Image (tube, rainbow, N blue to C red; front, side, top):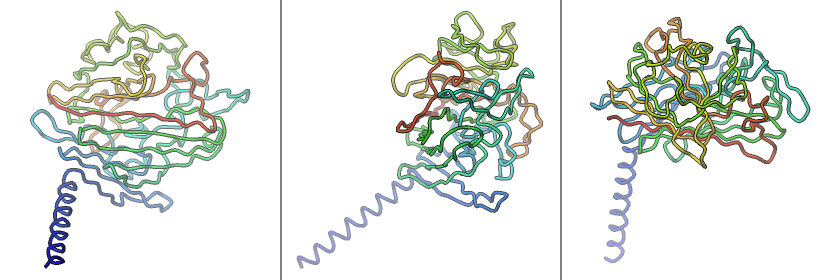
Length: 379
């Protein structure tokens, strides 16, 4: 009888454990599927992360890209709030860096050159704002255009790894990179990057999603309200390369220290806005240790709010100035001028050439780290 009671107790405990695990699986779920194949035949997976509130993030191994992010508005209606493509074939044509993990060096490097430890390195000049060539977002085939290796994590996430060989796109050092996306029960999408190198190199890995909190990709984002925890910004020359000056935003259209409607001053007679064709600049965040609030974005009509926190010194706010209605994205929508914006936490642009900026140099034995947290809500 005693053994029988023990067996029954064990069975009850086992059933309770199964029920608990089943209940847990209803809170956070993750699945992976084949998304398509690369031109060379390699298989590409896509991972879907869902939390207890119904938020859904989809991440693919190609480019370590955030394919979509579904969040509820103030009435609970879910919608995808990112620009991008429906299929892998679409992402293979991606020239706007929609949703991408960008590297080795996000943003611009003047003249496509930098000197490190008395040696000069030459990069591809793949951008020319103002007719002035520069290196942009890692080159012709940066991290956004390569196949990463993905696997699920134990925390409702996906871990993606990539090894960038020495000399890739002109950058020195064999670089081992890991990017992890995690969707939490607190409605946070965490993007975390880390990297190590065997040779001194420069690094600025950036996440580059395009956001429209209305959930309607045909609507402009000029009516969104933006706060940037940034008392200063980096003025640029005509080629959108920082001049080296760190300028206060006070009494300028660059002041988002208090929430402002984006379109309110985008057409102001201000040199920085004229050079960038609108907002396309790096803001210098308030100094602080660790992860801290960098930006707050709200769409007043839908009520959706996105807060961004980071451990980086700066954030690039790009207002979608170069979207021109020629790119057919999800459901065939032609992405028109300023129908999405980017908020990219980062190191300073052109920092390999500007010794007064925070150093982007990574040396053997060191680990590069970048944390970016998107917290979604509605009000």
